[in-house]
Length: 399
Image (cartoon, rainbow, N blue to C red; front, top):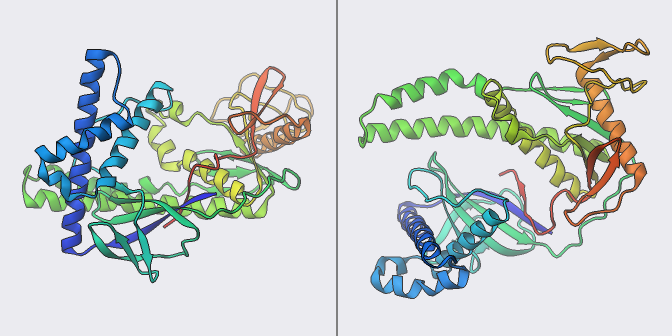
């Protein structure tokens, strides 16, 4: 299996300058390659692939000697990412590639020749030995290392390793837990547990507003504006880190205590188009939470099931399966008209998700090429992800 571990690195002034040059060269080469690809496509109807982009490098280095200051494989990685970006676009997995700016997150990738020394340093070609905090043991062969500089000025290295271990078989027997995500409570489980939504952005909103207001009053291009911009970035980074920490701890607990995890296949991207709820949904981090559940379950050989988003989990009585036609969001508790059972809306939805997952397991549908299984029941399509993430995709750990 492939695993990516993100560690913090601390380059000195000389190393930071070298990294800045490498970031600039990679960014320039990306923008130049994108412009050239667009030009060739307009003229010939065909774009430039990875090998065609790499063939341009020697000529560019002769014309622009400063490109040679960056490790050659860093620029070749840019060609690889460019070709993959267009493949993903034409296969409708991603948007059209964009030009990169120097004002946001910067990153470069080293495909080889990177070493971890004594558990406290990372060696990067043409950069040197950089101090690092390796918070966990790096197991396996290093495949690639992606070095990034965040907007708050911090440097990280994402180390992708292959441990050559066989992925554990997925065991779909044992306790099945249904999880219903929401805004009042981030997660409500089928056994009645409710986990609060910390609302990190709301808690930090006054601080963010104050620092953003100070930034807007600074003159563009001034050093004071750069300092104010860094303070805003650090405030956003603190909020993001707090959210990730909470989601990692909660997802780890749920996976460790249960054998099979079942959730709804929510269309978070579509729900974010609702301007009244977009801020709250983004702050909750539903997509990140379900992704963490998926790869952590796969790592431990446990089941992960996604119930179709059109399954009426909130409108169905978990006792008699009576279906209610209309149920507005403001109704948090309701009584079944058929059996008279009084339900908590979220707990009832989680129990229905659990029951639907158990029916899908009992159906024993065969795995599909996408890594899941599909079963038809009552006109609704649901998917069982026995291998939530493809084995060649990295599973990121908290750093």
